[in-house]
Length: 482
Image (cartoon, rainbow, N blue to C red; front, side, top):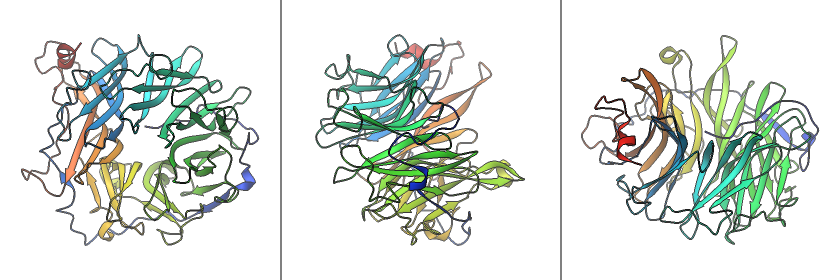
């Protein structure tokens, strides 16, 4: 899940980008034919992955990082059976078992008494092995951005901010959705902010020194705001290019319509006028609404932005399709990809769910050039395999879509690749607590590989603690962990 806009209204562009400086291009929405592709040996769930997620009452994985040694760090929120809420940071071994060298239990629980109502959205591993989490904190005075850094053993890094935490005042409200580390150790983050005096949300990019303090050599006192002329703007993802330039992906509002936004900044935090049309590109992937949640750089230097595009069902905007746009290195639409630079792919049949829903929240490129889009496919947690030209693998959208098999409300917030080439999905599913008669969110991590170990086609779900299986009214995890 990504940071979202806070409100609506009208204002002039605040800085850097004017509405006339961005080029808007549109493509027709289409579905790929679904015939002729045999995916029986592709990316089957790997039941040998016997992970150990220490879940509480209600929880969800918001992001995941696969470390260089193959271990897996995940972060998300939790609420236990007693109603106490907080965030968790957990690390798994490459085979999915709990890494007990990480904070003894393999999990660091951070309750409200330490970080009140904090929601983590992104996690990275620094070159020195330390882990950095970004997100936001709810306070009586609005949302504030927060950075947290941890040592490789799971303890707070006291050299960063105040005892490992850095609270940020970026206007009246702010959310940091993604972060990267520069080679010099500085941290660059992107998100959304509501600067004082404005009634609209702006996209914000901020840079920090290695100790968490603002880097005042970047932009205006360490940050820059990019605002829309007609409504809200938000930043969800960023990447750092080899020459130090920063590419940011998000969305901007034009009345009742959301369009995808891609912007590039110089290493000093200024708009790169050589990119797109005056520093950025607006892309309308549907007549209704679309957003871009993740941007990656391909091996050939082209840029890939993924998210969703809304289509109309009986005159009501309630159907989402996977959407992916590709750009040349200078920010122009890559017309050799999809249709006019965009692929919009629907794979969830309306007859099954009565509301088609496919959405990409994360992406990566395989060594063979194929693209994996993780998120929601066929109405559930899964991923789509695309060829280099934007077409579903084998020319069949249904066959190229791989689902973890969970029904109901499910979402993969992150996709990762282990050193041996196996694919990981992390997110949540919606579960019914038979004892309480209530639904709750349940963190899950699923691994796929080239074959099904026992042949039953069922994914291995990382949730070894069945909720209250002894029917004593207390969550099993709360009994086992402090």
